[in-house]
Length: 125
Length: 111
Image: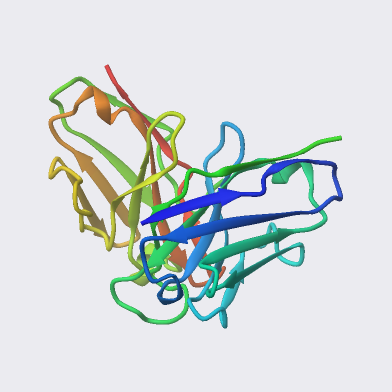
């Protein structure tokens, strides 16, 4: 199982970036996926998640209305479109595949199983 | 201030036992949602250490154990080793916020 993020870089406040996460070694469409970020010197923050089919999506309040998660199961790739970027969005962005022991409902009891190495986003003028 | 509260730091000598607590509320841990633990070694991506409260992924030594009671969970590490020095994060789901949550993280120092 391998996840490889790309698309990070430096962008000015108010700008946009699209992150990608290429998956291999597992049946991508069978798994929900998440983006998790870590600001410099800070802890982990779950950003967004998407179900295997793409029907269900969820976002942290801090990014709702500005970020959009999507996936292309034919390309085994997860995306995060980030608009209206702010300085506080500066972070390493990790993608991870989600698993659950006992399925209750979308997102409940989900956890991050395998993580990518991350891609760095810097928002600065 | 994280919804899941962890001590900022813990420490122990090699061979000792340490525990890291994760305190939540009735909308997350107390509601019965599973707790996970992740280990992040310096300069690396997080790694799943414990899932479903007390299940170790393949390859994680049995020196690591997890438990949950009420609105709290704990990670215990016995036979502390220098390689255990890392940041540790708990994670669960919150029904009020409808999001996945992480604790603020705990830095483990091996003396």
